[in-house]
Image: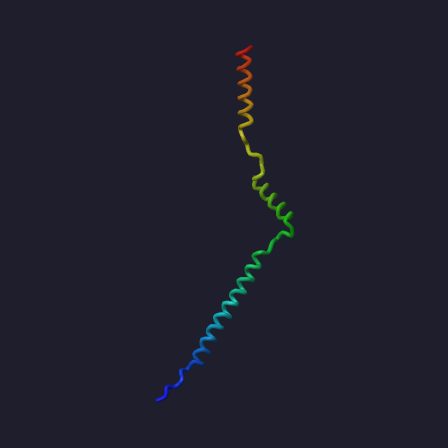
Length: 92
C-alpha cells in the first residue's frame, strides 16, 4: 500500500495568495497614511521670520507682552519716603 502525496502545492499556493493580499492591503494602507502625514507637515509660512512675526503679533493681541502691574516700585517709594521723613524728624 502506497501513501498518496500530500497536497502541498495547493495549500502553499493558497497561503501565498492570502499573505500577498494582506501585504498588499497593508502596503496600500501605509501609503495612504504617508500621504495624510505629508499633508499635515505643510506650513503656511514661507520663512521662519514670517512665522515668528505672526506669532509675536498674535501674542501681543492676546496681551502676553503687556507690562504687568506691579506694586513694588510704589511700595519702595513710600518706604523710602517714610524712612527719610522719620530720619528728619528724629535728627532734625
